[in-house]
Length: 228
Image 1 (cartoon, rainbow, N blue to C red):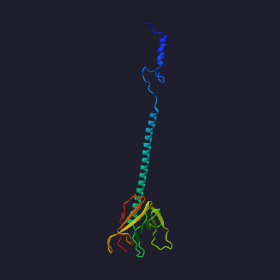
Image 2: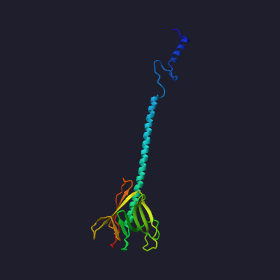
Image 3: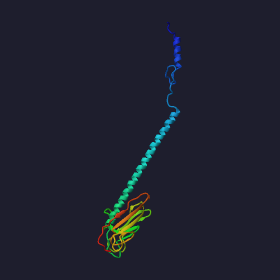
Image 4: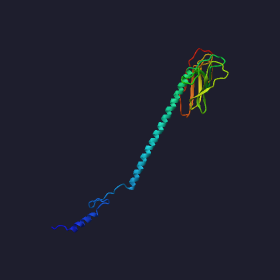
């Protein structure tokens, strides 16, 4: 057996070079060299999937922000309603009776109520906390409390009235007064005039938007012996 000549070895090397891969990787005869990287179709599919993922994340973030905003608005609205509820109950529970038969202390209609009561402790007051008050709804402003100090005196010029907005998102207010009986049958009426308060006062608030609802406020004023 003779040794292969150098020429034969070089021929074998040339034969092997014909099977070198596209990136310089030497493979055996008959093997298929896989393509390197991604095809255009694979890249497009990956981009589409990534787009769906990003869109889903954006939609979830948008929903979360809307839910957060709605929750904050609901909490603020309920807090304002609760504060108004407590303020009305405190004012009407302690309304003061009158003593002048010609000037009733309590005058109520279906959409307004005028009475005397003590102002809250933190109200801007002068020498007296007793004030003549009126609850009314004004379009565009909401539920208003108009008040002026009550000095039990005759002034040449009445004191200046002040206005406080109790609740801005109110379209209308409806009052009802419960009469306990006596000369007239007991029941709810829509008007009241006298120096003694009714047994109960019911307040219904119509809020905006109209889908919002707050239960009727029913207050039992402190009653003194009838002086009408």
